[in-house]
Image (cartoon, rainbow, N blue to C red; front, side, top):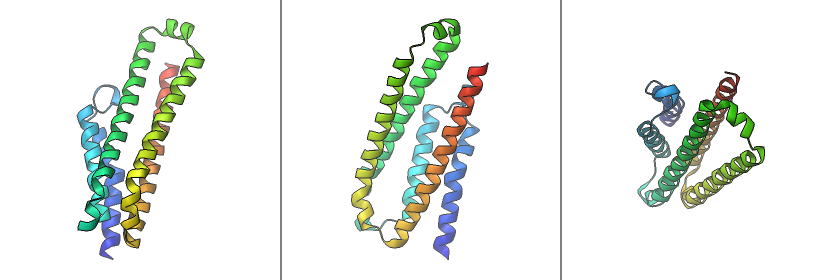
Length: 170
C-alpha cells in the first residue's frame, strides 16, 4: 500500500513539475536554461526515487543519468534553434515567406527527428543493463513513469504545435 502511495505522489510531481516551472518562465513563455536544467534535475531525482534502487543497481545508474541529461541538452538546443528561426521570420516576415525553402525545411525537420531518434536509442541502451536488474515492482513503477512522461511530452508537443499555429496567424 505504501508503495502505491509513493508511486501516486511521484506521478503527481512528474505531472505537476511543468506547471510549477511555467510560473518562472522568461520572455514569451520560454523556460530559461537554468529552469530547464532544474527541471531535468527534478525529473531525474523523481525517477531515481520512484525506482528505489538497491546498492547493486546503483552502479548502473550513472550512464542512465548521463543519457537523460544529454537528451535534455540536445532537446534544449533544438528548441533554441527553432526559436531563433521563428524570431528571424517575425522580424522579416515578408522576406521569410518569399524566400522560404520547403525542401530545406524538410531536411531540418528530418535532421531533428534523426537526432531525437539517436538520443532515444542512446537512452534505451543506457537503461538496458539497469532494467535487467530491476525487480517486478520496480519495472512496474518504471513502466508507469514512462507512460506519464510520454503523455506529458505529447501534451507539451501538442501545446507547442497549437502555439506555433497561433503565432503563424498573427
